[in-house]
Length: 279
Image (cartoon, rainbow, N blue to C red; front, side, top):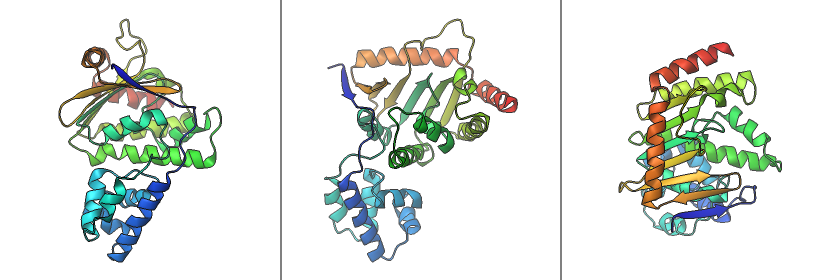
C-alpha cells in the first residue's frame, strides 16, 4: 500500500479522558515523592512546562517521559501500565496524529511550505491568527488545545539537538504579513533565533524563480532511528503518510532540488533581516 490516508471533519479532537487520568497519576506520584514539577522535569529531561502539560492531560507523554517519571517516582510500574491505555492527544487533527508521534523520535525532518510558516516555527501570535481564521470557527477551548499541542511540538527543536531540521519556506509567506506587521515582525525575530541553532537550517525560496521543484505543493520527509524514510502530504481536510520507498524517493529528489533552488541559509537570514527592516 502506497499511502495511509486519514480524513477529518475540520474540528479538533476532544480532550482524552485517559490522558487526564494518566496526568493525575503522574501528579499524585510526583507529590508523594516530594518533587516539584521543575524537579521532576530535571530528572526526566523535560521542562516543567512539559510536566505541567502532561499532568493536565494536554500532552501525550513521550516514552522517555514515561520511563523517566516511572524511575523518579519509585518504579512502581503504575505509569508504564497506564501509558499502554493512553488515548489520542487533544489539539492535533486526526490525520496528523501519527506523523506527530513519529516526529518525536525522528533523526531528520525536512519541511517545505508554500502556504504558511510551518507549525514548528510559528509564534503564538501568528498561530492564534491562523486559529482565528479557521472555518467553521473554533471555540476558545479548541484554540487553547491547538496552541498547546503546537507549543509542545516546538520543543523538539531544542530537546532533540541531534535531530537535523531543515525548512524551506516561500518568500511570499512572509510578504503576506499574516496577523499584521507587528505579528510578522515578531515571527521573523523568532525564526532568526531558531535559525541560529546548530541542528536547524532555514532556507527561503525567492519570490522570483524561473524553475521550481515544489510546484506540487507542501511536503514533509522524516527519517526514523533505523534510517527508514517516510513522507507526509497534507490537504485541507486530510493527510497522507507515505511509506512506499519509490514514492518517498521521488519526494526526496524534489526536496533535494528545492534546497539547491532556494537561497542558502546565510542568504536566507540576510533576506529575513531585510524584510524585518521593511516592516
